[in-house]
Length: 366
Ligand code: GDD
Ligand code: MN
Image 1 (cartoon, helix red, strand yellow):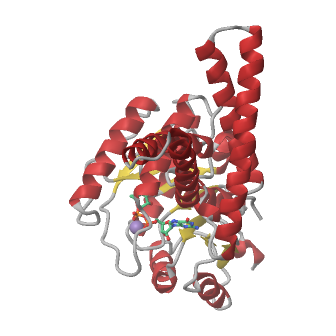
Image 2: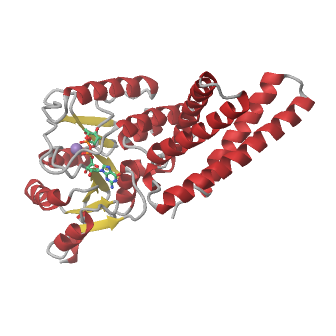
């Protein structure tokens, strides 16, 4: 009896507001995996629609179903990583909850891993023979997805045809080789894994047709695209810079433009330079706060009363950062009298301070 409960395959399903898809999804898995000992873990980020409760209800009817309920956190890649880590099975598959991926390919994916002990991963691909993006994506998203694929292939030296796929099956021992390098921020865990494997993995691909979503809506948005660019840069720096730091940097650069535009505007309106500069700095700090709250820290985005507290603490953090910037630049200039160098050193120290301090104070994790 107990033997039957030990899974050979764990299906990891990240969810955010997918309540209506839970039961249909498990029913499809049940059909597809008749001869396999499997279990499924839904990794839910405390969805407001009650997805986690729905999974628990189903789990009381079917012992193969469980939930990993994460509170105060968001993120697709991190959810997949934790789901895989929560499993005892030697093989894990990741598949979306929304029925867009083709679960009937799972037995074939498992068979390939069983037959070839050297194989590390099987990827469900839309870009091989028998595969297709179907009508599951709008033409704009299809174009964006193609661009991202080409970028990832070139910049990360990935040869797989669909590194953007959210549908794959990986051997645990292989996953363990790369897990320490993976970034939990972001959407594209497969591209990150393949990049971390540095071409050493044996990869097999299986075509599938991307289906249309039936219930709920996609979580892909502009922030996901920027996160992906962050992932590429993080990977290029060999993981020295995190996705979060890169996003923080992008926001910082946008702040420079806000400040310049604001100062110009105020001067045009007849304000004196000091007033214009002060307003410019405050505008930049404010838009930086808003952008970081929406993008860099959207997994712990501040709302309601927290929002105001966060804004004020961000002003305070930036004020100290500015003092550190000037202080360090002055000391540097005394030692090495090259203004551009000294000024840049000051800016880097100020930016690092702002990043570290705001992540500890303004957007402290729970
Ligand atoms: N836990 C958790 N946390 N799950 C999430 C989050 C999150 O922050 N964001 C999205 N999900 C879950 C969704 O509930 C869904 O089950 C799955 O991740 C994919 O999200 P979608 O919003 O449906 O993404 P998509 O359809 O636009 O894109 C998917 O398919 C593409 C093609 O394979 C993703 O899997 C892409 O990575 C993939 O490229
Ligand atoms: Mn989807």
